[in-house]
Image (tube, rainbow, N blue to C red):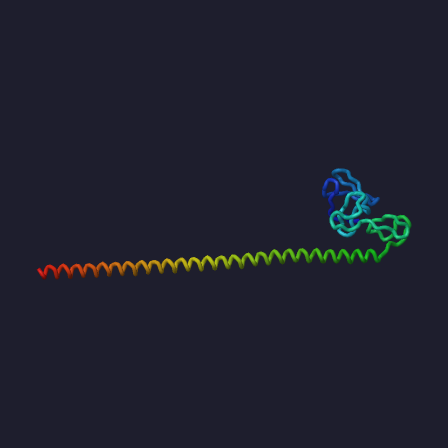
Length: 181
C-alpha cells in the first residue's frame, strides 16, 4: 500500500513506517497507530488513536455494522466481526455529502475571493473619487486665488485712479488759486 504524505499525530514528524499488520509507526517518537482505525478514508489524514471523527475534515472514521453493532473503520466494506457487507447506500450518501461539503467549501472560498475582489475594486473606485475631489478642490482654490488677485488688481487700479483724480483736483485747485491771486 502506497502511503500518502503523512504526519505523526503525536509529534508531527513527516515520515512514518508501514508494517505488514496495517499499523504505522513513527520513526521519530515511536507512536504506533492502527492504520484502519486512524486513517481517514476521505481526506487521508492520520488521526490520533480511538478517534471517531477526522480532525481535518470532520467525517466519521467509524461505521457501525447494522447486524452486530460492531465498530468498523469507515473504509471497510465488510464488518470485521461478522463479515456482513456494510451498507453501500451509507457510503454513497457519505460520498454525496462529502461532494456537497466540498462544493459548499469551494463556494465559500469563491465567495470570499469575490468579496475580496469587489472590496478592492470598491476601494479603487473610492480612491478615484477622492482624487477627483482633490483635483476639484485644487481647481477651486486656484480659481478663487485668481479671482482674489483680479479683485486686488481692480481695487489697486481704483485706488490709483482715485489718487490720480485727487491729485488732478488738487493740482487744478492749486493752479486756480495761484492764478486767481
